[in-house]
Image 1 (cartoon, rainbow, N blue to C red):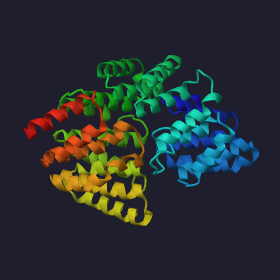
Image 2 (image 1 turned 30 degrees about the vertical axis):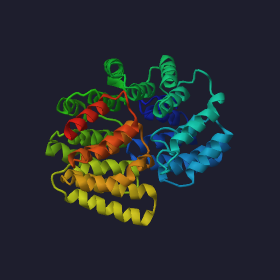
Image 3 (image 1 turned 180 degrees about the vertical axis):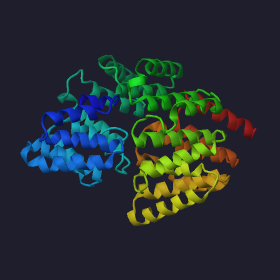
Image 4 (image 1 turned 45 degrees about the horizontal axis):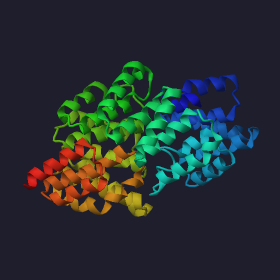
Length: 414
């Protein structure tokens, strides 16, 4: 479990070794099934979950509950969150279940609710006393959310403490978020580069931390055409990468930010990221993935694929009747309008939904792309006051990116 929580390795080898020692170790089958599922090996994952369920009667009641929760999570059972919360109340140190709930990619984040971040923080506070003071996982998760909330001094102390206990990919990720939120760009850039040099060759977090480096470069005002060189070197889906969700979301959002900055994306790159999306997420209803599929399809020169995707999303939203499904449909339509140069239309579609980005989960920098699309559409539509208002409302006074956008808007207005 410790290995899986570090994010450096998949832990598939370790969970497999446990099963080799005891073929009837039910919880090990469930843990292995979860890791395989996150890495896109659905059929193999299902085999291990089936085995775990068949062995559950011989497990402890705590293990039976954990198996049911893990199995429910991969099947999208809507009762899973309630089961997991009840389980954590009984067993607050069961990190296997708690880790299902928490984080920007956790069950709460992807539940389509607006207060999932607050619920994460409440769970961390409720369980804190039951974890050792030097439990790096609890600390780094706490530090991540402190940074997301803007409690930057507190986040710095917690994240640095976690890193001092265990220099792993998960702790490095929390520090990267802290650097970005605090706009300490030189420190953040140096940290990620040093981490890549020392740990990058044997960590599954390499791809995502390099995405963070690209975000820092963009934030610092580096020309996006220069930042785009990172894609050629590191981001191609054919390389050994992280989980399919992380690969899709990092790549699609990176390319869309390049598009916002006026960089021409090669057709082959657009085709590749769309093929990757279709092969791993050829279904609808997973809002975070759907949002990034929409970015990828909007980048293609032909509008047919994107229009088909929006039609499917609209059909799903009609049947699902949820706020998050409606938001994704509208957001996807706005992306298509922007890509076609219909900037005023993109502004009109997006404006009522700007506050809805929290519904899709993910971190602050992952969700801010929605605001940044709106701002760029406003600027290109000469709707400068609306663009300026969004930048002021998000109140990132130390952000070089926001300052540059303010200056740009001022020049255009003047």
